[in-house]
Length: 223
Image 1: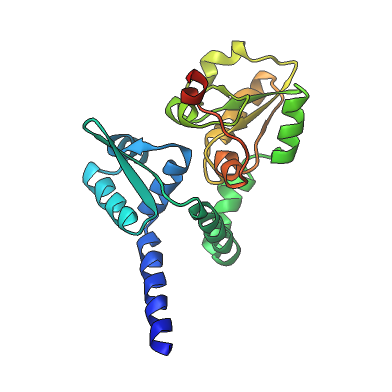
Image 2: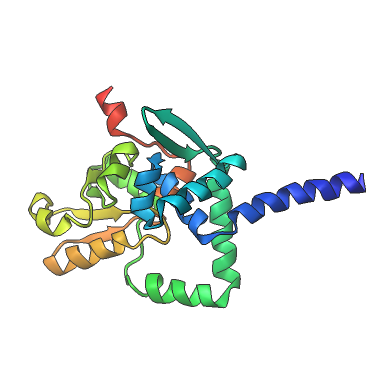
């Protein structure tokens, strides 16, 4: 029994070792948003094609991501939704126990926005009552793949030129990828100086999906 226990610990250690890479964590964070090809992941992560392919093969062999072929392209996606909870636990442990991580979190996130974010429960209630405008400031490819129902796609890169589409009479809630994404923060820095009442969604799309809340997609809408 002791040998079996040690062997099981060895298998657990292999999975932990595969995840012990900042690049692989980043790729998983991107795959939470949408299924993507190697080329799309390369562009989004700014890693090389060779590096992305190598990381994906490790993740695939571990059963963390899955792949499908479509023509000449291979598309990757999360194979196990439990990776969302694992990543959330890793973030929490890191933020609470690694001093440098705590300092980074405070400097680049917590101190960047003086207003508290909107909770998921508050967002659901206010969307149902038509009290807010919800904007998804991620790249359009991610919005089309999966987004919060009722959201408008306004990528942060195009937001300055689309302010005229947004009413100043309603509060705007913006969301991006997840806890370490800065696109929603950038949206606040664009909207508020122009007189818009704007807040961020707590946890972004990653935490919305992890909570098991409904998502919509352009493909589903078209079908």
